[in-house]
Image (cartoon, rainbow, N blue to C red):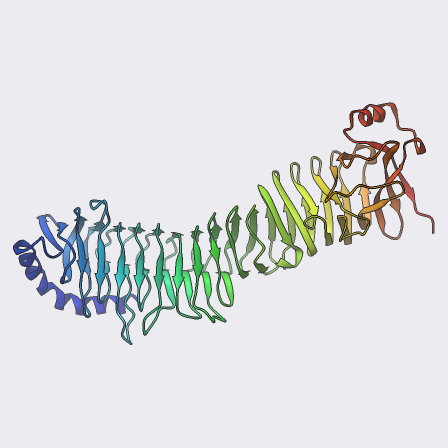
Length: 542
């Protein structure tokens, strides 16, 4: 892949180098009419003049530094490149548009910015204005921004602050085959591709082949108009300990009618990590999957933060697969599938509503400190754990949670129970634990609240937790907070753990005189904190 790109560049370099002197002369005669880059010595160039009917700006040196000035722009037509920058030394090359506060508009008939380093030096590209390749022919794809580093250990860094578009190629394409350096791509404005004749299968594409090369990509909006394509695609096919980190804070989508293809995809060999983080504003969709983790030996983590989310499915193939949800939007997620290898879901800070069927082949589900999980449907995992400071709720006001596995309610954990009627799972919250044990640690809390204007009356009962077995070390150390479910005069709450074929934790409404509380309970009841009249364990008679 590298040799093809270099060969293509060499062909065009022979054609465009001859234009440099013409471009400089033209710029000297009429810099007010056309964009041109003027040499300043030592491989430095300053770009001046507004966009006009311009020619390719070509540079070749051991080290090159290109900067822009206010008002600069460049527009080339036909099959011309915009910038062709070629470094043969360790000093590498840089293109810096920060000198033009308004951002330079760069439009080309072929590729807008092509940067190649063959001497082991770094590549740095920083754009401020719109960059566009209008190429619309069959054959070779033409990218918006291209960076190729074929040797050494220096990094490729691309930062865009204006929109980038390629009509028939990648908006941003990097290739570090032969280099052991890292790749860092940051887009602070929309990037798009795929509208032309040949289209593009990848909008933001980073390719590496090194046992030490990491790839970091941070994007806002990414659009690929071609069906069955990839919005963001990161590849490292070398079998080493490398990392890929992708952060999304905008919409990522591919062409309408896609049945395959991905919004975000990573293909990686060897160990290391793959991290995909969906921040606020992220909305990722795809064809076959919205997100694909293709690292069979890596530790994979998908993080969905508040305000971020995706539509459709995600698949994770790794030595371990973690999903961390920090208040992210899971309403449009169909499934997240792991491969039964040390796979875990963690509900972090914030409130998250999830369906158990969304998680396939995961082994553990943990609600961490500061997290609230509204769990709907059936969750099939080995263990569901609620840590101190975490809250578990069945459904979303109210609902049914079926756990196929164990449930561990830790010390300091809270189980929220909403009561809106007398029918379990539809009018009041119920957790049903099958194929496992529900363990209630000392210091765990059940927070019982009325919902939707409902008020319980004498004789009403609610089976809030049902399990094949309920394990409690000391039932009297479990806290029941009824401050959100205050009853009428003369009524109180009674708590009972019923041993039967399936154990049941039941709360019911009784008359205050039905069971005399201990003195300590009288104080609590009088303060309105708990309102418990009775708490006991009994075995249900057949």
